[in-house]
Image 1: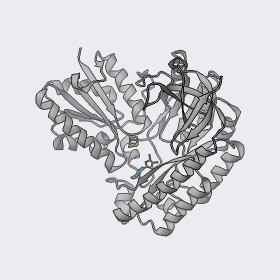
Image 2: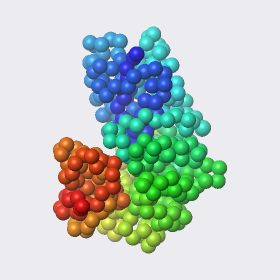
Image 3: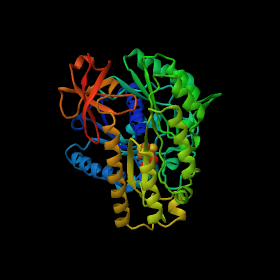
Image 4: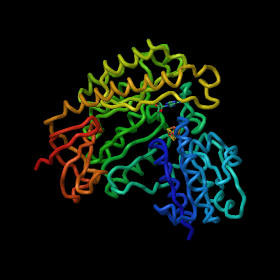
Length: 436
Ligand code: 5AD
Ligand code: SF4
């Protein structure tokens, strides 16, 4: 039996895709391994969102190139967004690669592996309008068995000018609500106590009259002991109906990731985001009115084309005003052939991008610290997910706001709900004690 190893870069969607890939290959008789050194096949599931993500993958390919020298029968395949973006061009540039397969072509993976074994290098980067892999039961790759990703839609039709995703993941399509409910029920029966519904823009989910708010309600109704999260939301599509559904169910986690990207309406227009600063502020107001304890996180891009110091200041002032609980912050990275690359000039210097990003990070660090400071002395119900990364003796879980709390207790409570009182904190985490 041939063994395969898979490593995953990028977003949660990619993690979820890797779980599908493992399932698809197991069905074809391959054996999954966690050790690349003993593996016959190495699969690299890649991200293309920023140039840096691709550089990391290229670095990894050098390692596999060296490994192949001592193991000439090793098969190496590139999967995911970078594979889709570069297509067969990368087969020419990277002789270590035996095949390339895009996110909609994973059903063809075993054929590509078989071809590679007889020396035929090939690429399958066909994008599909229908593929949702809804009949494939993912093989969960996390070790704890507590929290599962469930993909509900694929692709994206938004066409934000900076983004590569519409080109790498194709058109937006939703999976049937029935297949989603079945997958969630199955995860719950296997002991999972949290699911995160995934899509590039979950708010656009729509399947035969079921919209996202209704889907969320159906999932929340499965069992009150099952926590439900979702990612990623899009400001323009974030509906009041969704806010109401979130308010009606205790087991829908009070945490929203709502990427704003910039605080300047002029830049948002250039980004083709379809909303203004005011619109975004209004959405946050609506959320806070109905869900006062809900945490909100965001994504920010520093130094987009033509961004001035004034625009940048508007981003800083938006952060200060809204006091996000956390944020992912990036320097703008030009991506080949998308709208921004074809129509604008990447004219903010690297030095300015770096300075602006540092200012954004510095401010957000202060705000994240303040957000955690407010939790001191409070008791939260948390779902225990596993042992902490730093020490096997410590456990960690999350509260409904998606904040990680670290505490000491016996491992047997992994997968259970417990109350933990926050006794200290850092900017990144809360530390606590279990309440009996
Ligand atoms: N450069 C920098 N950041 C980007 N993102 C998407 N495209 C780019 C790009 N070209 C960021 C956005 C998005 C997150 C997933 O990655 O903030 O929300
Ligand atoms: Fe995920 Fe986007 Fe990266 Fe693709 S390009 S892996 S969709 S973050």
